Amino acid sequence: MNDFLGVLGGMGPLATADFLKKLVENTPALVDQNHIPVLVYGDCSVPDRTAGILGKGPSPLPKLLQGIDFLNRARVKAICIPCNSAHCWYSEMSEASAVPLFNIVLASAEQVRKRDPRIRRVGVLSTVGTFQMGIYTRALIDLEFTVLAPTEDEFRTLVSPAIALIKASQLNEAEELFRVATAKLVARGAEIIILGCTEIPIGMRGQCQENPSLFVDSTDALALSVIEFFKSQQTSA
Amino acid sequence: MNDFLGVLGGMGPLATADFLKKLVENTPALVDQNHIPVLVYGDCSVPDRTAGILGKGPSPLPKLLQGIDFLNRARVKAICIPCNSAHCWYSEMSEASAVPLFNIVLASAEQVRKRDPRIRRVGVLSTVGTFQMGIYTRALIDLEFTVLAPTEDEFRTLVSPAIALIKASQLNEAEELFRVATAKLVARGAEIIILGCTEIPIGMRGQCQENPSLFVDSTDALALSVIEFFKSQQTSA
Image 1 (cartoon, chains in turn cyan, green):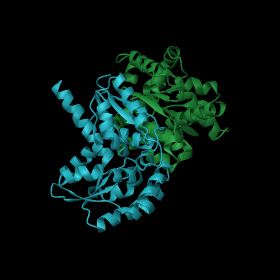
Image 2 (cartoon, chains in turn cyan, orange):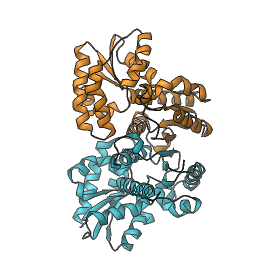
Image 3 (cartoon, helix red, strand yellow):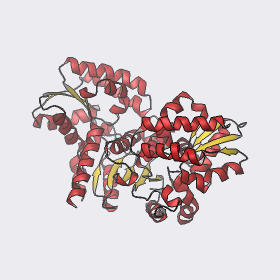
Image 4 (tube, chains in turn purple, orange):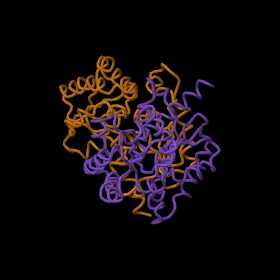
């Protein structure tokens, strides 16, 4: 299966389906056989990543490594993880994997640069766990961006409840909360906003359609980076 | 992995993503951990099923059995195949599998019965291959339904081109053709129409939203049958 993309999914399961859809939609293909074959390990019993980061629940790492091990044994070509919060354990997973792991944070930062090289002030909407671990903040500061994030109060009253609504499939209710969170970031000067949680784009379809240039969807960014890698492998083969 | 659903996917890849989305949306769950864990073997290099049936291309059976074997070795609980045409090889796959296989045709017929027990005249939109193999026709006649399908001419000018458009992600163009194909079936007396190809619902979103009671989406039917099975296993465990 060394031409398969390994997908460590299930975090959440809707985000995995959304990633697969975006992978297909962004692949230039006219027939099934031109698409990238995938092996998806979708273990939705992985403990909540945010709770794990905040010390309010068990660590998801053992289950994450189980998935990495399964995909390695199946001999996939490379592995992607359509879940931003899980990237808090990126180095542990990367060390445990013989095959390369895509990085959703770097893929998103890359898309910001491609969108408009003049952009300096980048907003990030993510889980509170991803924010506290600073994975976007560090990567973006390294690339000389100024980072804007929701305040503690905005996480508590807007972002966290909205993500919970998506997990319960209440997408319209989620979108209302995200509209307010977006407006706050823009008011503080964000020129572009990374949707740094694979669930968030699912609950922001309206806004993303109305104003596509304001957002970088991390799921799309991951899909584009996967497609580019598989294309380069084909060319070099 | 004996609590995982095995998914033999990639036929086509967009249909697999659509199935996973419908599986999640139809599962009563408030958190990730309540969903059904999945292992998706998405080999989109499986030869075209319709061409195989019509003798215009290699048989997809060896690749199908490779997937069934992989999922069996991984010890999934049961296997579903979100591709109607692949069900032309259902008995071969079923014989090769130690774990049970869901049947999308029977799942769809079950949904017709549940929708309205008075319905007698059922239209089926499918690939020409699925139609020629008669898998829906036989199952529906067994259940004492009258079956209506597109004519040879309608397959050639409407249904087959529309499915090719979906595979190339041209959904609006596909929907135009399906509108005509649907109208023809209704004019000939169809009371309900099974979308007997997992790609078709993707290219009929407009019509399905406008008139949901006219259609049974085979992807939804498969998802519902999977959810019911996993729920019954939980209860009996």
